[in-house]
Amino acid sequence: MVRKLAVLVVVLGIIGVVLGGVFIWQGAAKNNLIIERMKVEKVSLALDPDNPKELTQISNAAEALKAADTIAGHRRAISPSYQDLLGSGRFDPTNPQHLTYAQAMNLENYLYMAVTAFGLIQVVMGSGAYMIVVGLAVLLTGLALYRIGAVEA
View (cartoon, one colour):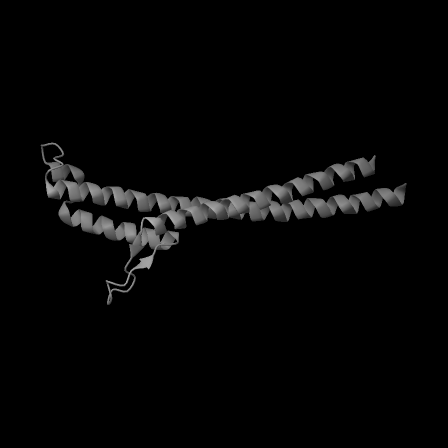
């Protein structure tokens, strides 16, 4: 009976390790996808204030957040809020100020979503690493239990 339980525990440990590996693999794949899409769209940031023409490709949450906050500051220089921009009127796509504000909002939101995605990816990969550690612990426990069952038999 102990050996059957041990085999079940070993199988559960293997499942935990495999699932953890899948979480890490999926997290890495999605991280690379976001970075690649930003590279294709040439989303970059001037990190050196003394050299604003030297742009660096955004490749992590901190850089995306800095870029989004920079755009938000520029957008608020046009108008403190969307309501203030419109006053009592409607959005006018022929008005360059309205159009620039809307484009800034779109890019800003894109970058804030990237920040969220990078954060979620870190959570998924951390969960995967935890699953691997727990899976290995369960697997080793199952192997020890199997040995105990062999001694008792």
